[in-house]
Image 1 (cartoon, rainbow, N blue to C red):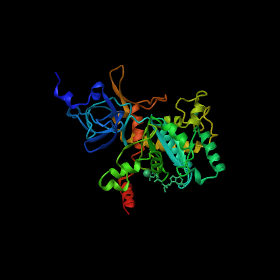
Image 2: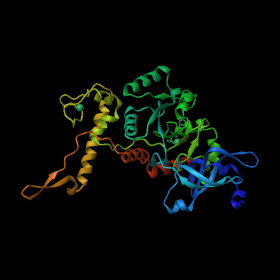
Image 3: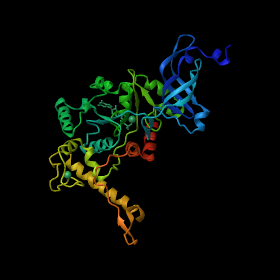
Length: 377
Ligand SMILES: Nc1nc2c(ncn2[C@@H]2O[C@H](COP(=O)(O)OP(=O)(O)OP(=O)(O)O)[C@@H](O)[C@H]2O)c(=O)[nH]1
Ligand SMILES: [Mg+2]
Ligand SMILES: [Zn+2]
């Protein structure tokens, strides 16, 4: 009557699929946070299973990433083990940091120490705007500024088109509001070095130190912020990924799309059309974008960078790809330069992912090594 497997299995696991989210990957093991905790024989709730990947998945080349939604089979309650049998389709996929299904990014800056640099902030914002993942702007270390100074920044950034959340990890200012924004979502932290990203994680995730200590070897010193990606569980639901800080993201958008990454200019563009469809909005006749906004200077600087970059790329592409072979009615062949599409085209999904990935590619290996050496002292 019974097959052997049903004897070994507690009845609950046969009721339906066991679903969970991969929160850490180490070698060939995957830590899976279960959607519904399982009950073992002693009525203890099991929230996590350490899983392997089914050979079948390996054969079809199915990778498993942090953030993946997975179906787990054959849970072993005693040892809290299991096997990943299926990976559900990913909504988003980043390679740096390697995270699947990230839903939003939390851009963290400090109001002071290091001082808030408008130009650097602008650069991060433009970069974040060019990704398809929504983001929140959070300004930490509010305790270092008077309330008047805080208000000044708040109003300044509102003119840029943002609603920054001013917080202080030190005094807990704004943390309740921030927690609401992070609830039940997968969020990736990003921002320059020293702004308090790791401090924020330590505050929001009470057992993070404990978890760090469980990791063996070199990681014992609590260096969970560098190369190893892990999703930390927020007590009220939601997952948070820390990333190492870097100070200047690389911009690689096309000159024509750049203007759309400034909300305050976007707003002007919505009011009508410029006379020229390929307008760069720097004083052309009948341009709809005026020069009367604080970040206009940033726009011009980034625009020059984008143009220079585009020219450099064009020089690299060979003759074949920049000209089109045409045939005259007489049958004579000639080359014509390819025309560029004048219309603003939305960046492809892939490109947007790439942009977000670039956010994390600016930390050089040397910098990382330096960071590690510092921490070893
Ligand atoms: N005054 C003040 N200092 C803070 C606050 N939050 C963090 N710090 C300090 O800022 C410094 C840097 O904090 P980290 O959490 O290491 O910064 P990080 O963003 O993780 O830096 P990287 O890992 O280099 O990217 C530490 O000395 C913290 O104690 C805050 O709210 N107020
Ligand atoms: Mg850190
Ligand atoms: Zn214009």
